[in-house]
Structure formats: structure tokens, C-alpha cells
Image: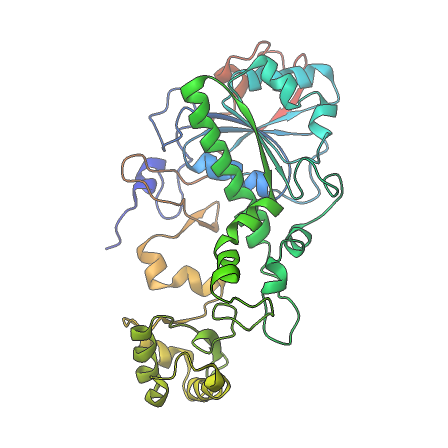
Length: 398
């Protein structure tokens, strides 16, 4: 029998996400470590919405402000948020958002520098209403610098940090790591980290502040270990020539007899020796760091992996310390025994979604649902004119 995770009980949902997410209205029981925190998110795409969804799954009440024109692409990161459609071209619409911000703990925006100010929702004006507000700004280039006002995407932000140039095999082009490293690693997670730190400060002092989260900053900071390796341990800038970038045969992927792939990360000597023994190549067990022999070692490892299917190798390596694992696609990952044991995925609205992370022993998060339920945001938050949507510039709600 599978063990129910704390977030499942807290959200009032089973593995299929049958119930709506709890904890969004004023009368709900506490849900998550951020229960009671109010967040206004100015709708956008990419890392800022991801940050808002993460805060919602941690228990915050996140209200997303969408524009009447909508978006060309559906925002798949809007789960767990209540939504108001507000005409920000009208003074009453801006005033409504200011009214929400006056009652909020956090405001998130992902516009180019200067756009929020032109809308009348920049940090100076918002913090006049609410000096304790944490104003989180998410951009690729940051709020200042030569590129600050220019367009870009994940691949562009990675390209100037050194990270993109470092990813790939020797002799080949840089490889694009989806948009996980920039948008969501160096972007969303650093925005959330900054917001939570600023919330702690605001709680202690009553002083809000602006969090300038730039993807180029976050990715650069994520690369701290590599910068240290360059300075102290001889890390080479040439792609595919180091231990962690496929330069080493014992940290690489190998094709199996059925066209599958197997990942090897046998870094420590004891794990490496076990790997070579289980692979059937014990003659390489004492040659791990002999760089002169790495080409022959790689060829030997590749030849061995090509003799069996991925499933057959899984029977060999499963449950060992050889640090060798199958490379699964998204659909296979959903069925992986370890991920299923941890309930790493859930079902909601007929779709598989990642479960909340990390896990909390006392204040479990909640699975963000497509429709969090209670729509009466303005009444909940006590915004003046809540019963007169036309007067406050609200054209719709979800």
C-alpha cells in the first residue's frame, strides 16, 4: 500500500487530485508554511509565474492579475492561484491593484525595467501604500546594465554567463539544457529565495524592499562550484574536458543494446570499482584517474553497455552503489518505482503534474489546482468597492 504524503492530506486530494486546493479563503485551516501570506502576481510568462505557483504550493494566497487581452499561450503555471482580470489602462483598475497590494505581503512582476512604473504600479508607488511590502522583480538581464531594456530568453541569458559554453561534448557545439537552468533554476528559485529572505526581514523590522532577481545573476551564482574548481582544481574552459561535463568516462551516458541509455556517475573510488566489476570490466578498476587511458576506457564501457538492453542492465545495477541508472523519458519517469514511492507526481484536472517540493514535517504544502476555488478575492482582502466590479476596473475573475 502506498503511503499518503502530508501534502496530499493537507490539500484534501487523493492521487488523482479530486478535490480543490484548500487554504485559499479566510476560513480555511492552515495549509503550508506560508499560510497567511498574501501575494499579488502581475501576470506574465516563465519564471515569475513559476515563483508564484511555488509560493502557492507553500501555502500563500496568490492572486494573479491578468489583463483583458489575455495571453497568446496558455499559462500552465497559473495553477493554485486565484485570478482577477483587470484593465490596467483604466485608473480604477490600477487603483484596485494598489488596493490589493496595500493588503499584500508580496508583489511579483516579470516585466522589462520601467514597464511597471509606466503602469503606475512601480515599487515606489506601491510601497507608499504598504511600506512593509516585498516587491519581487524577475527579469533576465536585471533592472540595470547595458542589456537591461533589451529582449532575451533563457538561452541568451545562459550564453553570457559561461554556463552555456560549458555544457556539451568535446568537439561539439554547446548543448541547450531546455529552459530549466536559466528561467527556473537561476530565475524562479532565486526570486523565491530573495522574497522569503525579504519577508523575514519585513517581519522583523516592518520594512519592505525590492528584490531584483536577474537570471544572469542567479545562473552565475549557481555556478559557484565551477568557478571554485577553475581557480583551485584545474577546471578547463574547454567543453567536454572535465570530470562533470562528459570528459570523464565514469561520468557519462552510454547506449544499450535496445537503443536505450544508461547514466553513470561513479565518482568516488569505491563506487567506481563496484561499477567496473558489475559492468564486467574489472581491469579498469584501478585506472580511474589515468587521463591517458580515458579514451580506451570509454570505448570499453560503451562496448559492454551495447551487449545488453537497458532493462537487463537495470537488473545488474539496481540496489547497488555503482551510481548507474537508466535514462528515463518523461512518461517513464512517472512510472519509476522510486518516484512513485515518494509521490513525486500527482494527477489534477486529468493531467500529471509535479507534486509540491520540498516536503515539510509540520506544515505540508498543497497541490496547486487549476481552479483554487473561492473567487471572491476583493471581498476576502477587504478592497473598497468589491461589490462594484465596473467601478474598480475588474472585468472578470477565475
